Image (cartoon, rainbow, N blue to C red):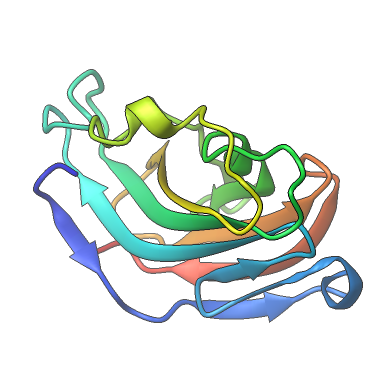
Length: 157
């Protein structure tokens, strides 16, 4: 991944009532009956830097390991639909961050690879930041963003 600021700070969590049966998201780990996604690194990437060379705004990248527990169809890139990212920096509404181009060129070749049952691959997702101060709230969902599991707040590295 591009040389940039990173953090290993433990995010803070907020549970939802749906989290018990559908899965959980705590300490950077989303655990569902079908998969486990473990956030391994969080990095801020400045405009013009590798992984963010096409934008004029900073980005935040979440690097993760994804394990296929059930054998259902799963790829590192399909797992990004398990999360939404927000920055609460406006008095009138919460801003949802947009997914950016892939932040790590070394992982591009395996992002659409089918993960075997019991197998683990690395992945990464990048969001364009609205500002460089407000923490990012990563919301884990089940069913392509329909059912919220839990939230974790990640400081900007």
